[in-house]
Image (spheres, rainbow, N blue to C red):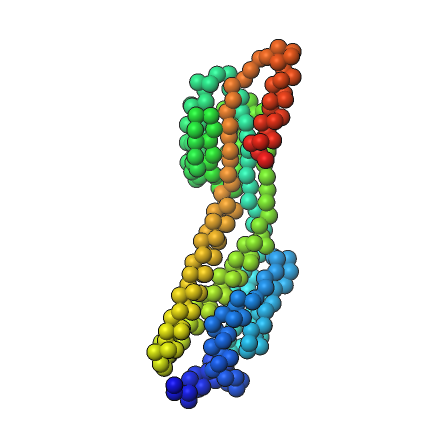
Length: 255
């Protein structure tokens, strides 16, 4: 193996701090990237790699800055609050024949508000609308029947969102460096090792990007579950059984 060109490459990559190619290769192989820890959105995030770089993410800035001016790491992190909203509604109509027209109207409602239908059946429909349109959609939904049950949940996923974004940014930088090393490879062994690590990093990056797309969809679109039932008029005793039925049904459906 030709050590001199490799050693020079390592010194240049480290910004002239005198560290060996072995340390450079170890860092870019992901040894430090895999061991990084990520904090929540309201805390500072910092990690040190084998070259002494420090990355910080604070709530007062949306960019991560490196202490090494020769190799700045500008990972943009969106620190806005990320909320996932789900609405569960049960509506009563006078007759079962009203279910189908009401479900069709909700499907049209979702599309008119920039959303889409997830699934539907004869008695219920699940659809998504932009989170900013949720209140408007709920108002329109209440016109289709008597709302007997309603539950809206809000889940804060800001920490998960920031964690994913930081990990993706780190892997993108690592992949870029590995691609550079692949071009600069001096021997077949070096090229094969870099190609193997590049494939691993690419797979992990694609998985995280898929998780991010799913999370962004959940944040950007609120989910509405609407269930239709026919109104009933039981006698005094029937109301007792009906109330028990509704309580048990609520526990099993929305649990």
